[in-house]
Image (tube, rainbow, N blue to C red; front, side, top):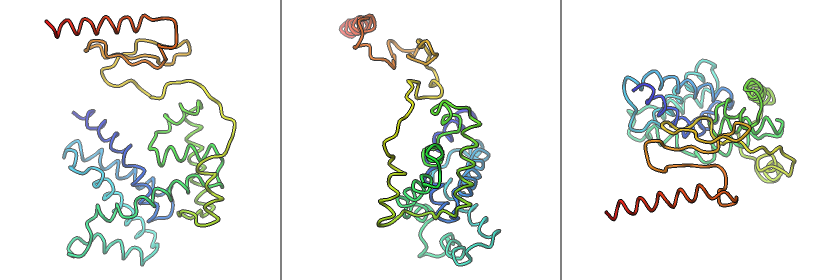
Length: 266
């Protein structure tokens, strides 16, 4: 049961991490600190959920836990006393006119994500650093997954992300969406300009899904096809069989379809 819960937590984290980090970054004004606080909430989930079970609203549980961590951080650093008072007020569930925690965290979430994207893509960072940081913060990818996409060692990506967060902090980059002329000037760093890129065909996943079996590789080791051995002709391929002269795959598909039709008719 524990491995299954851990896989569920991992899936939830991939969906929610960007939103959580964005909300925390708005509070603490530092995306490196925001990621650390979000990771604290993830650790708490890994410790508690195997015993207590997955909450009905796991995203709200993670964001609520992370926000409490942020309040503790602000208290310890004696930062923004007024802001701390506002946050404490929001969390005072005894007041009938106070919005619930989930609603407070969801407030302005779209703008928070935009702020996170513009901060991660700030021109003070190199293009490689922007991409790696955005994939990590917004996309929720692991450093191992990003390293595979870049075709570089994991340590290189780890160092790239650490340096990027340090640079943003030292440069005191504001956590905000640019306005007016600044927005126009900054869009290129988010949307990208024309640039030569290295292109290499490689698989877009880190591991094969549970129960699937790899049945074909390219010469360079790229996974080209998987199947479900427990079901008839459940097959996924990464090439274009219709573009070649080898019709065996389609012929087998037709035979399977005819057998299936005969079985249903009988």
